[in-house]
Length: 450
Ligand code: 2HG
Ligand code: ZN
Image (tube, rainbow, N blue to C red; front, top):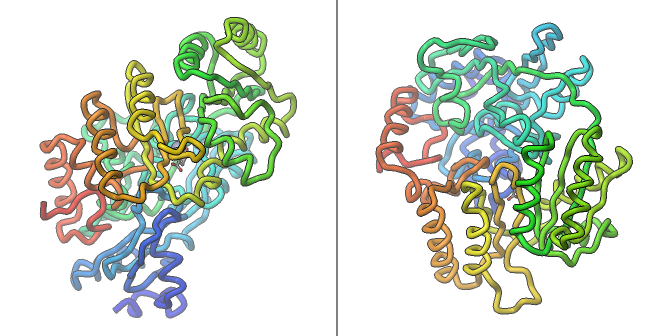
């Protein structure tokens, strides 16, 4: 019984809590958790896992619920384990440049704690104020600085986990170098709660960057944007190279009632973040491309406030288009295929009524990662035919249907379609070893019975 493990105030059964804790923010369907529990110690988590194994209960780990692939959704009478009480930052070590915390620590609190020691935890995204580090690790969260700093995986120096069969593991123990056969830590990173529960995390930190600047540039042709990237990639130290289309920009301007810093009539926009000392070099390239009519307009921020304003145009897209209930795709493809991919998307999803947007394109172009958000087709069959064409194109070009958001429940079908069967079979074998009774986030990524 849960009440043998948790105090009464650590268990919730009511509908409001079920609705709040049984989903991530993009999931609109109904949920059905058996209960939500709020452990306050590792002991309680161990007891819960042992209870679940004995009584065939299922567990859904839950962090800040900011995921986009329904990895934290509970529809099958599962016990949701909210990690929000296990949120302490236990140590920031200035010499080692590392930070230790519990899995429920909020990403932004980690960034702030590092900053207090004049250090940086550089993985950053719009949802940092609510996401938990445990969830970031479980989904290998990316964000807007991957081009410079990599994703969460690059920063995890140790992980404590309790596997689905109740084994406690302390993986890598904070080392910078550790070449001791299989790196189990990396197996847990991106495992979406299917192998075990992450309880504690240690992260590498780094020095703060020098003064950075933000530039917004507009283009009419995607090819010109690509040329711009190719020109600056080898010459300028890039901290971000993010793009968005006209529809995405207009949605943000509309939602936040902002005046555009440059004409919103161009087809594509790019935010570049770079070191201030490189301004002259970058602006020379911009001017030259402007003269060649490849770049249509450009604005460079001249204060920290303007930096944030320009960043807002990119970071607020997801929230601004949420009213359309878009179908979200998180696509990855090699740079050499990007031009034809963008053309293909345009071709597949063009709207007969050109006065209304049918999709939004934005994302981490510096990482070849495109977020396509489609306004759902009224006719589902047509929608799925178009999706099939999109996935066929990606498969032919060795792309991926998940660059950074993970598989969860949402992308199970496309994951199976896109990935090699031998690879998936191996993943299932690994899952069975760590979690023989399939108690950990069952049904996410794949169904074991397949
Ligand atoms: C972003 O890059 C997030 O803004 C969200 O990954 C992407 O809403 C999306 O599709
Ligand atoms: Zn993203």
